[in-house]
Length: 120
Image (cartoon, rainbow, N blue to C red; front, top):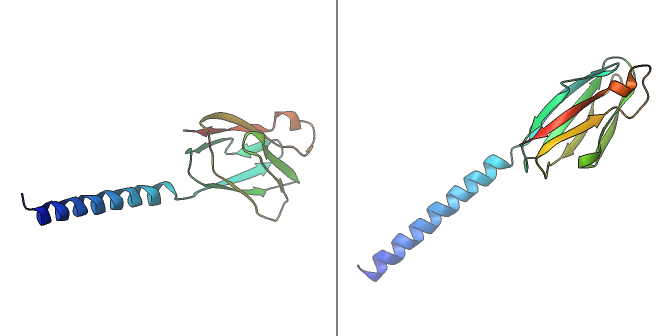
C-alpha cells in the first residue's frame, strides 16, 4: 500500500471516530425538563425518571400553599410558592432509587408527602 494512501485512510478513520464521539456527547448533554405540580400532601408526578450523567431541571408549581422540595442524595432543595415557578437543576451522578420529600410543614399529612427519583 502507498504511504500517502495509508495516511489518508488513517486520517479519515480518526475524523469519523471523532465525529461519532461528538454526536454521542451532544445526545448525552440534552437536558431533561420535568414539570412537577404540588398540592397539599402530593407531588405529581411522585416518581421521576432521570438518566445518569444527563442534566435535569425540575420545575415546580404549587396549587395551594407553600411547600418545599428536598432531594438530599443530590444536594438539591427549593421552596415552592403558589403563583411562582421554582426550579432546581442538577446532574444525577449515581444510579438507583432516591427519596425526595416536602421539607416545609404543610399540615396534617405532611409526613407522607414524598416521592422517588429513579436514575438509570
